[in-house]
Image 1: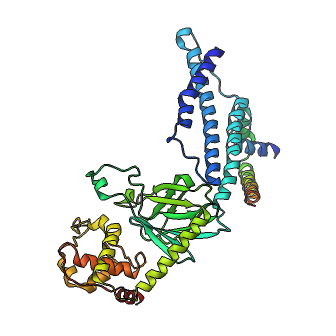
Image 2: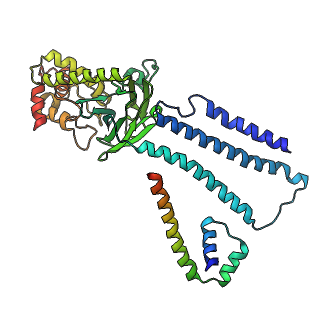
Length: 57
Length: 372
């Protein structure tokens, strides 16, 4: 699970190590990446919204 | 090699950055409001960040091209990835962008805060003039191009403020927060005065807000910044910023003049009086399309001189001026001109250039029509 989170974070940032990418494609399940991806995208939106609300004060 | 790099970076910066940044007239103006100064300093900060990035990136590139050229036997390296370098070149732009966004957002917040204004001015874009209404003060006027037509035609030498001068500028006080409520009667225009750092679209059916607090008295010029038709280039903006007491005196004078004008509606006007007034109105409002001698420029703008329908049919003539003609370029002047101005300009066009009807249209009759 942690490795999935790390891979999704790397995807958000846009940089991933080649070995980890290979590993993800060999061992990972697509469903896990999709689920974690959606949850973390929502988290990112929440964080951005919080910052925006703070800035608008 | 280090000297080469320094030399290249330095000359690039000098060649590109400095003249552009310093040359007067090329850069955006510092302006005369706190907001315009902030915008200018943001602009310069971001400009120098871009110069540094440009010098570094192109410096490294040119250095590499020169130092590792093929004629010196350089061989290209083949490798797939370098995570560290990739992280750095992702994180550095991220930090730069956030670093620019934080002060920019702070300035934007100020720009959008039009609350607590001491004076409200409605700015209305019209083809092709600006109308200003001092809300709650009963003072309103249109601001028309002041450049003589002869200069535009090339028959006369161009003046100092060619196409940047008007018959009546927008007068504002310094040191007071003035809120602009901006809209349009016809198409999208844009009210733009660089020195005030205001460039706001005026859109029919919408009211946009903006505001200024001017620090220095002076005359500030701008233009319509949204292509709005034939005379888009002929509807400049001129703002005359005055000391507060001068502004108050000006406003009081204008209010009194407006009252006088309102009283003038009820009395009987002489033909000669109406003609004198009407010639002025015609010159500033009508002549841009129907031409100075009333010859028009058919087919878009019909001739008024010798126009038989106009001469025969006063009702139709008045209706055309008051309500416009839908589907043509003729706008409705019911809210732009007051009853005296409408009566005067109709009288003028019915008696000028050989249209000798001898008829004087009374402002009171026009006022009655407008009330219907």
